[in-house]
Image (cartoon, rainbow, N blue to C red; front, side, top):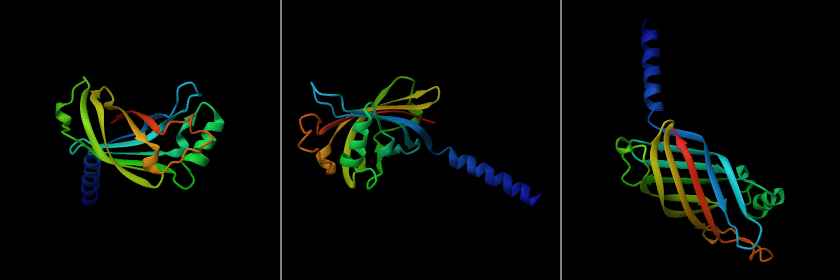
Length: 179
């Protein structure tokens, strides 16, 4: 009988703890470093992990660099081998906090929030501040953001041969639903 009570209590605790954080393993990050009049430099990763603590507004994400897919296979190869050096720097990590986040005040209408945190990419860390649109949805909390990072901030070198065809300013779009 004691074992049944203990097992029941452990299960109840596990359920309570697991509900503290909301997770998505299928978040999407799109980045684009295109320059007008040249071939599109754009990739999508649809397997990004996002974790949100709705009680505190803490948020984190992890993207594997080899998960980014390009339309052109050669571009993907150059991205992984020459630019981002995926074997040496296999992931990008963001850890931050959503300012003024209150789970109980979210509605189905998007509200704009500021997110401050640290982005780790290509072996370098940088404090960033972005805006995000956040709302409750039928399946969880939807988070959308669009911001720019500078390749120079992360020591990502663009070879002189293609410097006119690839932008140092990289537009990043985030779309995820955590539940």
